[in-house]
Length: 171
Image 1 (cartoon, rainbow, N blue to C red):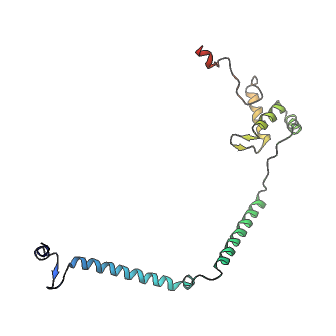
Image 2 (image 1 turned 90 degrees about the horizontal axis):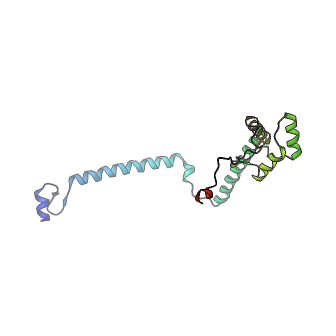
Image 3 (image 1 turned 90 degrees about the vertical axis):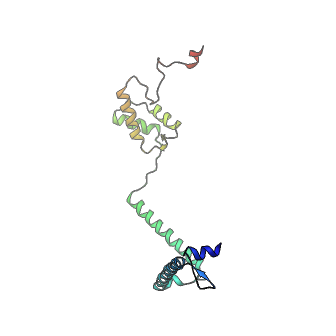
């Protein structure tokens, strides 16, 4: 059966001893040409950069540590430049006296004790972020108080008469 496939369909050539496929030989030839071109390209790349050809030096780990140290120093100098440009202010919670003095200075009607108690209970956080400027927070409280004078000084919502106890509904 193999002999009839080889002879009858013209897919293979033979010389009496061996048989082969011309199309397979052609594809193998193309692959070899591509491989040779890639080998030449790699050789020229390696020859153009002799420093890349060097084998591992005995002090390679020392060289690596030197490179890390150099990079660390660069990062420190960059961060020092940034610090010089813009000094970092760390938030310090105000005292009751500071808040009272600021409220009097600005002529606000915010209750200083309520303000401090509210933010101390929240660890001086505004949402998920640490407070940056307590004076701006006082301004917000003052605006809220002016907009709704009947509202308590704290920004928390109070229960209204419309609120219902869910347990009362079920009784």
